[in-house]
Amino acid sequence: MKLSKFKFNLPDELIAREPSKFRDESRLMVVHRKTGDVEHRVFKDILDYFDKGDTFIFNNTRVFPARLYGNKEKTGAQIEVFLLRELNERLKLWDVLVDPARKIRIGNKLYFGENEELVAEVIDNTTSRGRTLRFLYDGPHDEFKELLFRLGETPLPKYMARNVNEDDPERYQSIFADVEGAVVAPAASLHFSRELMKRLEIKDTRFSFITVHHALGSYRDIDVEDLTKHKMDSEEMYIDDEACVNINRAWDEEKKICAVGTSVLRAIETAVSTDGHLKPFEGWTSRFIFPPYEFHLPSALVTNFHMPLSTLLMMTSAFGGHEQIMNAYNLAVKEKYRFGAYGDAMLIID
Image 1 (cartoon, rainbow, N blue to C red):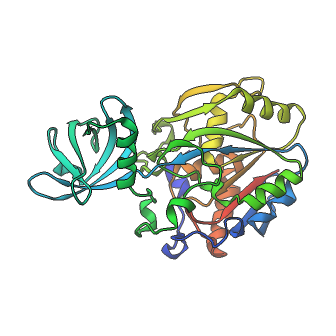
Image 2: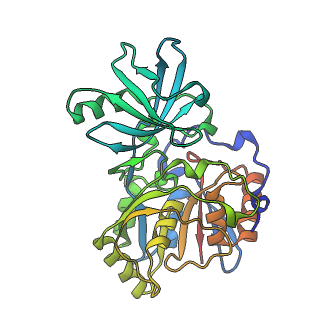
């Protein structure tokens, strides 16, 4: 499978820069894998496709305010620092990206906050763009973390091309976001409102929660035409015993299992055993899924409309079939569906 197979023309005006007014009232394209039929619905109509015992698998990761703006010592040049993950709590070491990267060297100090409340020192160049920062803060770790996150802002994707507003900290987060650690929101989950979850409960569908700390790898450009040569960034994930029991019961009872988002899809394919059952998992996944690919557990997928040439589009087309999904995307452009994390949704189902 070649990278160029995932190219399509996406007009800039179809990239969603704001969420829908209500979470569950974005548009929903329903793609039926077996027949190829396509329906145009509203997201809360997802109720019509699931029944008693069917199971939704959600990602309960919580996005933290990962984007900071600081100033370089001496020159005062503004530097964007994107927090990726904490490497050492005691030493306050963080793996970060910096922009512009060419201006930052080992030993440079960066100052954050109007009154330079926080100082960090560059101690390592880990990748071509990445750095390791040591934050110089003598107080307790909880106080440090609170200050760090107060100075940071919601890490909206760059393609939204706008500043963060007062609604983003809540809207760029699912209603069940619980386990802090992501820098990218699990976008498919953003459509589920409390009212919709309640109506699904009344219908006696089941919910299982796993944790996948969505990282920036989904947004990295792929620079090889042959997809077998692309290496995915690793993402941290956790699947506990309770989730396995619930999901495996649905599998054994031949109920629908719906992965809510490509992060969930990737995680359960990482942890599934050869007999089709899910195993508990704690660790990292670098699995890269693109067509053709045979899935073991899920029978349905909820996902947003993704950018051209993205790994998220590749995973979606692996699940729905490359030709069918690319046709659906061309239809989505024609019908003016909204793309990206704040955009509309697709349900792929048999």
